[in-house]
Each structure stands twice: as C-alpha cells, then as structure tokens.
Length: 208
Image 1 (spheres, rainbow, N blue to C red):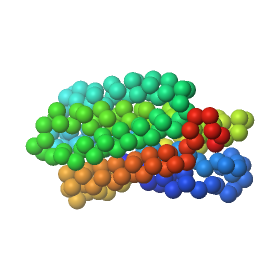
Image 2 (cartoon, rainbow, N blue to C red):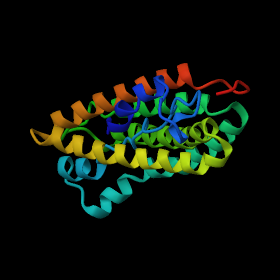
Image 3 (tube, helix red, strand yellow):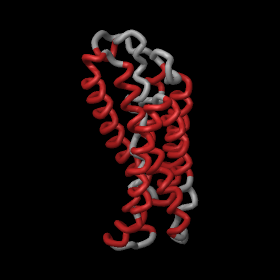
Image 4 (tube, one colour):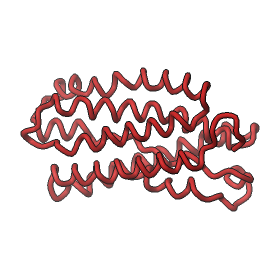
C-alpha cells in the first residue's frame, strides 16, 4: 500500500541524468511511481475480521467504488482549470486521511466507522491519478507523451504489486497489527508525496 508512494517520493525530487525520455532537461518524474492504489486489501479485512460473505463484501465496498467516478470526473475538470498540482496535492491528502481512518479497524469496529475512510481513500486516489498522468505527459516532449504515460502506468502497477506484497508481509504476524502498520506507512507515504507534489509540480501557467 505504501509501495509507490514511498518508492517514488524521492524520485520526484531529483532530475534523472540519463538521456532519452527520462533524461529530458527539467523532467523530475513528478508523479511516476508515486501513488499506489491505497487499497488495504479491504475484502480480506472485511471477510477475516467481520466474517462477511463474498456477496456482502461486494456491497460493503460500494462506497469506495462509487466515489471513483466522481473523483475522476472532478480531477479532469480541476486539472484543466488549475493544472495538475492542486488535484494531486488535495487527492493525496484526502487519500492519506482515508488510510489513517483505518486505524480504529478491529474485530469489534462497526462497518459504519469504515465507510468514510473507504470513500476518502477511493476519492483521493481517483482525484490524484488523472492529474499525475497529466503532470508526467506535460513534463515529456510532445512526441514522447504516450511513452511517458506508459512508463508512469508501468511504475504504478509495480508499486501496486509491491504494496500488496508488503501488506501480506505485515499481516503475517497478525491481521489487525499488520493492518495498522500498513495504513500508517501508506498514509505517511501519501503525505510525503503530497509535500513533494506541492514543492515540485509547478502552478498553472508556469513551465515544468
């Protein structure tokens, strides 16, 4: 869960010296590998902690899924109006709040307590991802914008894979302690990424 947020955070802060797409002057890889889908494997948590059936788990995840369309639509409009910086920072902060909202999770935690964190994490990610893609494509030469988007998406998938593996490692010693450790790491990584986005992604109208 914290994989991409932590793995790519320092990459945003330093130029890449190699030539080619990643060596374009001024290109700091502002969003590449920064955001991992902040999904604590929520189905596993709901099924193992609350003993939900598969069907009930699907319905329980609707708050997280339903806000994705809203966040993505808002991200496109906001990015077009203000540039990618604002939606990236806001989305990462909201996503971090959603992750930290899982800290009370435990066997006795009512489902209602988890609805807002699930929605916040889903909305924050949906708000961040389109803006992150736009930031990467703006940082690349026009002829290579498609390749830049492909590199970004590949990095995001790698980060997602590492995040799930990290979560599995953390919960090996106990689901609840591992979950709490994972959300702390993930939320901290999201906040770090938000700070780096605020520092290195230019405001609208300023060159990258």
